[in-house]
Image (tube, rainbow, N blue to C red):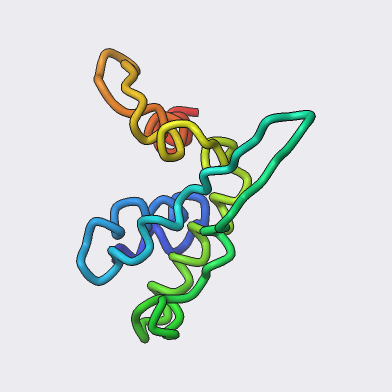
Length: 120
């Protein structure tokens, strides 16, 4: 982990997006979004809340004993709670919607979670 991101929790919240592709953190990937079934005004349901699972299935918090990693993962989950695309039922948190941003092909979720954050 890079020491400079730990000094600012905003950029640190993005660390887990990259870390989840590493074997040690692969367990955290499904916790990044919730497929809510929202049909206002008649119904709204969430069968399983990924953001409520701040623990590794084995019972070890953060999957490691590394305190820095646990803080960064917790920061990511807290930062994600307010992300509107993290509670969208469409296309796995809109991770499967292709878009073009600043001339580059990417996914809508990546634009929202990373590009907008760093650009503005």
